[in-house]
Image (cartoon, rainbow, N blue to C red; front, side, top):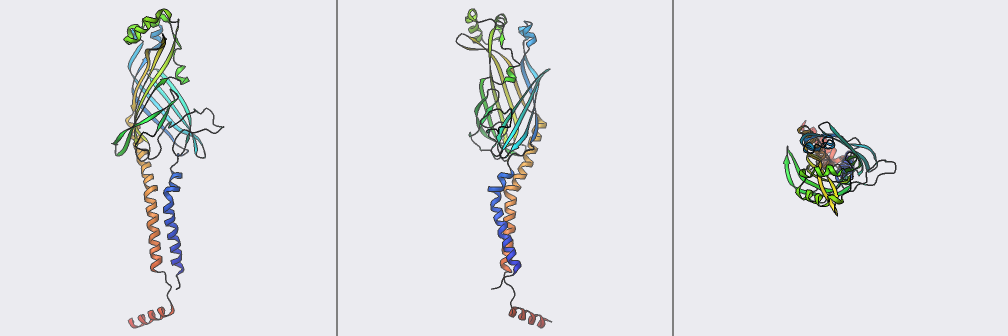
Length: 346
């Protein structure tokens, strides 16, 4: 049987397209959806803060030393500094503003470009914070469970991310997660803004402002406390995140954080007073921007994961069908019969 050359070409092209459709998800999608090298996102949070007024404290004005419900803003920029193969260097720059007080911080992480987990940094990347777990973002298509961990730079420890259920927000399906961590404050930038010790007389004058248990402990150990009293700081942070189910983009977030000064009264640390507390949430503008990013990225993923494979498969099958229908080349008898039929019709 003789085959048309065009049918053979159509069949080969159809098989190639079907093969491409089968490789899009396992081969092309992972490469195309890895963390890009041009990510640069700036977000803003607003809320209130409680702040220790160091000037009032130094002047002995204990009653007004702790200022509450001060308007606060947080500007956060997350961007890729450089990439190398399957690794990316990400900078997380944050500035907290409370009244006239400005508190900047900056961290750099080496992350895997596929799952966004912290990883070992190449030798020529300087100033990278050692970390374990997620640092600044969730991976594409996050899982609805407690499998993730998060690295907290304030305590330099890794904590579990708790899955809190599903929700729907501005047209996007989201997973709700919560991260809670408490521990010794280890971030050097933050520690540098806090006093390392407190004069004993000032500590005694603060007693009416302290929790009853803390005040009683200090009174009990006042005679043996050094002067000045060394301070140690603890920090407690809770973050509630709404994460897009398709893209892994955090489209809404609320952060609560408190730094507490502790004094070594007796055999254990005793909480003295909170020196800083923050309660902020993403602004409506940032929330909208995040939702828009999730929507556009979600469309791209839909095209890449579903539309493209189906289109390739459909066209491939169509070409194979056409090739089968017109596979035979006309023979001499067929041609004579056709001519006879045409003559009769004429």
